[in-house]
Image (cartoon, rainbow, N blue to C red; front, top):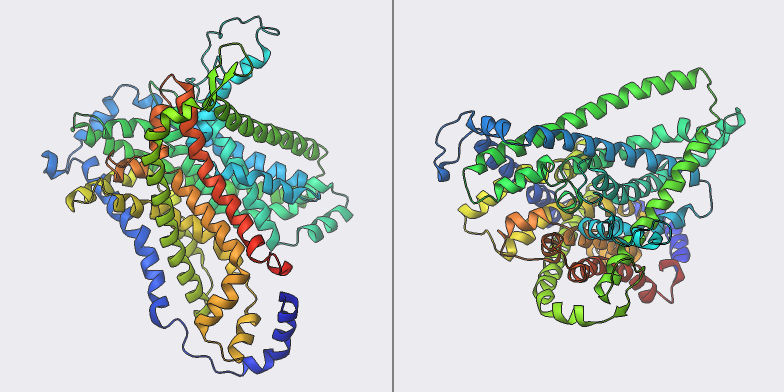
Length: 585
């Protein structure tokens, strides 16, 4: 029986099922799920922030800090490079966030009415599966003085028989860092916008605006974007917070002396001189304040820009340049997509290269020896990565499904407060609370344990999985469930036999997103694992400072392959399972 026939049955039996007196909803173990979910990321973040804030003011009894004082702040201010690190953090973070949002909005405005708009989302999805560090390593291989881009034009067009003596990776301006952030954040915001468009009547509103003499792109900007922005406000804030506090990408592509404030804090946390922990906590606290102030400033900017745009719309201003600007932004977005693809192709080529001397555009000889030599070293981190990612994803999936099912039975809908709570792990800088979590783990004797790493990954995996699955789950047509209930099926039977089969694809895709998030976690693994739990990401970031690109390429490729394989499986499994039921494929 296909879904269409089942829907007709639901229509026919709706009157009967509506007369069935519902039992008390939300009872049993499902009612505990929301509390457990909040505790999963609420307690670590709360305890972690407290464990970081106290040393920032001099209180850390384990290191002799028994009184509150301003000594950590004085040490922070007097530290060489602090002012430059602060400036670099603000410039790179704000530029990356502003450019990402501007490009994403312009791209969607240019392509939303085209037939291949949905294909654009599908093309960008694999980029989101790639861990930030793997993409950053690939970009470093691409733009380095001896990188792939230089090799394409040398020596024929440049005359360079040796790599040019210029600074690209680690440039003091932070340009490569911003470019790497754009490669991930623009696709993310594009997909958020495309998903939000399903909830507004974009085509009808644009048609009305066009009948008044506005162009298609300006119509979208003036009429549709204000409706969409309310729905993507929290993702935009998350992008801003991430850009200001990212560590792994900054270690690979950012300036090294001085680095960004987040990297500076991590260096001090890892310093053999333990007294630098106080200054590191102060730096982490400053970063927390920067992120909070930036979000408030951004929110204030939204109000000002909104008033300006409303006044402009009220005057009936027509713009002829909006379409050209959107086209230029889309072209730049295509360049970003091509750059990401070339970055991943580049590290793949290096992992199989036996000899690749400058200025050859391709390796002169190929080999599997790189993988054979690294196979033993790769085995344990790869297994650890799979175990941690699979365990955290499965636990998160159980909690999220329980929460959503409890929400359905309680007939409750999300509120803005619950969304803010879900985005808390994405808005709070990792470095601002992970040291406090590490202190807590040390006190209970759990630091450096695999279970501790799984637990801290769960803090970041769970929100992504919930946010990915919530809308498809809430869009489920409850007439199917009511029809099955009227035929005598229990709620759990409806859940397993009706809901999950119909929602199998979104469940698997949300799980793939969560798996990719876990694979890409660098700082949580470093702090919770105390350097004793090695994953592909932690090892790849460490190796990125080395000189052997073949070794780095092998680690980065494997790091990127795991999430891609899971995404492909998530897309393929429903097609295979329901290959004889086209409505469910």
